[in-house]
Image (tube, rainbow, N blue to C red):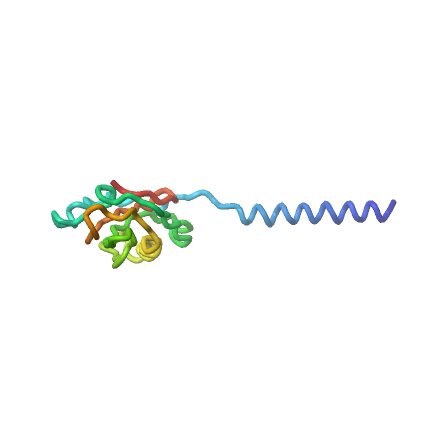
Length: 145
């Protein structure tokens, strides 16, 4: 009887400890500590011959970047304008950060994600200087319009 009681106490303590560990791993909600900066006018950065994301691009493999952990923990929000080329096969090339706000917080992971994007082959051949706006807002990432 004593061994059974000891094993029950041990199992109960193990379950309690596991509960505390899992509770510590749970994602805390995003708490904004900065205002979301006003969206830029993306076409204002483009020349008339440039493509703007969504107008000529049809995604085949398109994963949005994750919200950077450092920005999430600090409650920061912002946006990134990427400039990229799409070759005849629909692969991204020459991915660059056109502008990011705040600087150096979201651009790196946006550029990394964009390097893996694939589009349906453009009908009129390769596209140069395509611009895509990514919004980092309220703990999530979305495409700008």
